[in-house]
Amino acid sequence: MKRTAVVTAGTGGIGLETALGLAAAGFSVTVVGRDTDRGARAVERINAQGPAQGARFLAADLASLDEVRTLADRIAADQAAAGAPLTVLVNNVGAMFAERQDLGGIEASFTVNHLSPYLLTELLLPTLTAGAPSRIVNVTSGAVALAKRTFDAVEPPGSYYGFHWYGRAKLANLTYTLDLAKRLDGTGVSVFAADPGGAATAMTDGTMTDPKIVSPALRLLWPLVRRKFERSTSGPASVAARPSIVAATDDALTGRTGIVIGAQAQPVSPFNAANDPRTVEAVRRLSEQYAPLVAV
Image 1: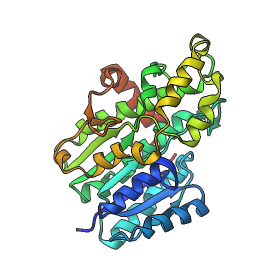
Image 2: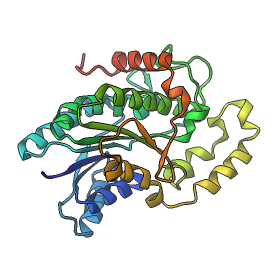
Image 3: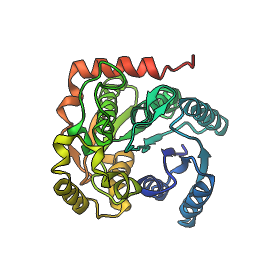
């Protein structure tokens, strides 16, 4: 059976390197992004490798849940028409914001880093199940360790600090990932989280340089933390993509699920807070409330 993969935010950085790795492994790869020019260049670069299956690009702004729904419908329809159910979904999309932004009444970081991949995954579960054995890979982050861990509402109270809000959204998505793995156990759909560790990307070279993205308590130490972070983000995106590629392709993971693949491309213990039953229930409630599977 033809193996197919979708990589969100796949037109550059870690996403593109992930797409390149999947294409090299024999997958027919679809990369998703906002910019058609970047998409065309990504497809050209992937196809220049001479993969067994040609790549394609689909345009979608993953900050818009309406566009996520349209994208899911397009992917499912295309896969059905081609007779090739989806076998790998890599939710690579992620963003951090120095200033609070509002997307349809929802704080942008929570939308992009959690609600968007949550909704795309849920809407594509039928085609992923049809393509079983199949895999879902959600890209996580070490920022979960500094996350604000309250999920009583879609956005926590208090002043906005981009790094902590980013970590909170990634924690929500990691919680969802581990919960989804339990829900899909026995279906043939395996679910993994992949932590790319440090990599030099537009986000680390831009937003991460602004000390206002962290709380005042951490801000005093931010120059030291930042220098340590810079040392860990000096590697190329191709190295940071390895955990996602391993999660999507490694035969040793066949039949396994609910595993976090760490920055060294090996299984690691998940962050404890992601398995807290109270967090699981709160994240599930917020996800269903703010990203309903049927648009209202």
